[in-house]
Length: 411
Image (cartoon, rainbow, N blue to C red; front, side):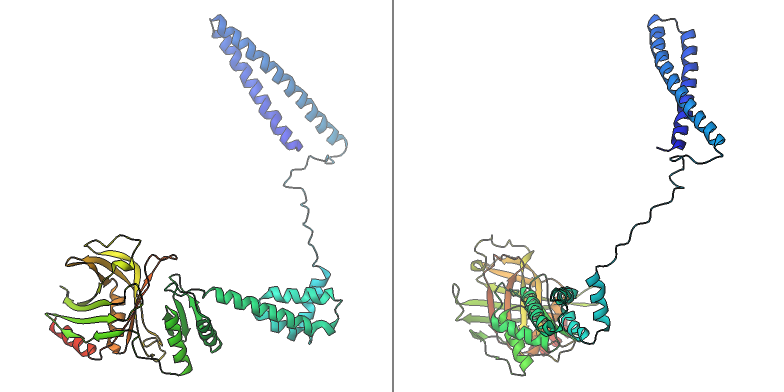
């Protein structure tokens, strides 16, 4: 504690002692109660002790002042304010010898620099490990190529494992096959940028074009496109109908499918497309999918109510073939769409699915208008899906685009 602080304590204590003593004396003169007078006497005793402390401190401070005057004003150690004391400068630790030397070698040595450049794409960690090994072997350059080769193999293996971890499962909940991983790796080597969305879909981008892959089948189809091979347009299951027709102000398409994998080998699907004109003159399109049966798809969940609620799964619709690889025509044509779901009042085992977003509806219409074979899937959003996987291959109808234009004109 500095002398300046002791000065402040002295003046504060002196002020308290002087003002308190005066107040107590005035109170004692005006008091008529014996108990009050006794209390004042006790407090006076405390103030007497305080006065002794003030007196002692005052003597010490006065003696210090006299001594400073007698010694010519030299500063007594501890009296300088903390703000005026010279601050100790923090000692800067020198870099370890090998680190400084390694930095210089990386920058200026014509043999070390190419070795570092091989490891640098995998991160600074591998460059540091190269330096540690190099100095551990007493800078013997005969070991340099061997060190670089081993570290490079380790770095590639670690990068490959981290990359594969992003593509462990497809959006439909299936493990990514070795064939699919090989296709994705080939795409990356050919300049495509790969990513994984939170919903599980894989993205494949090049330039301004982005394709979405939701299953191993989508990846296989993308692999065919990547290799320049035609994709199969034959549906996996037997289909009937699949032709769009006009019906009382809307377009309807029916499918009767058989040969599906158990537990449900047959199913019916009806797709409805309707157009309405709003008060402001704009047109709105609505797509609804009627699927029968559906209760086997949600064995651990309650059936849907007879009013629309947002489903816990997404509806996928992808057309066979490939686009031009542009933003308006991606290689994989289609997408995953959030849907509302409700039970159909005429049939308790029929579910009605309606695409929520107008933007998604526009993409679904564009997919239908391609006219090639379609793949319809239902994919659960949760990481542990309760939905039984559904995958339907549907015949496309090239006439849909013309029928839809006619429906818009008549709205």
